[in-house]
Image 1: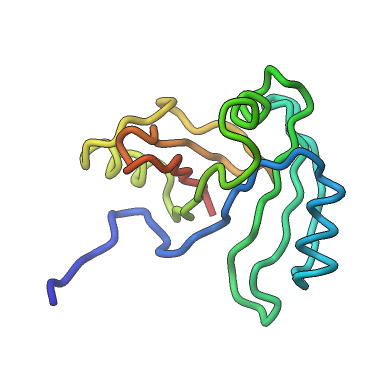
Image 2 (image 1 turned 90 degrees about the vertical axis):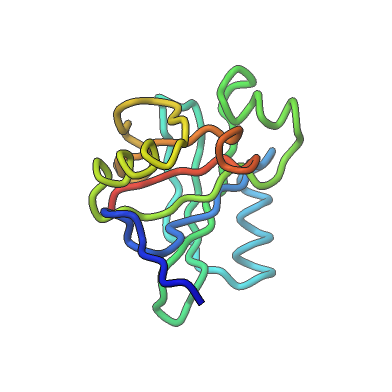
Length: 145
């Protein structure tokens, strides 16, 4: 087997999986009450016009979250996504120890970034997205630790 190394700045695990939802309260009930995930927080990201619920994927103390995203406006990115594709998986986010190094590694690998600089996302994390056309059809988010 070949010896692969993570790009400089990558932490090596999924930070969260983003799911676009129509009704945050009903979706929280599904994932928390029926499927047993722990709800950690609900917040609003005004810049993106979205309500966000973060649920812990591993209740044994591991890392990773499920991020539920409800649009506050049909014109928001999540509102447009739901209108075009319906509710469902929106993105997968990978954690970066050094987001600048991770962005540079993504660009060096030929990925097209949706912005040149990280922006503030949920929980105040700095985030940047790679265009799905360069990542096999999946919207990939890189977020700072």
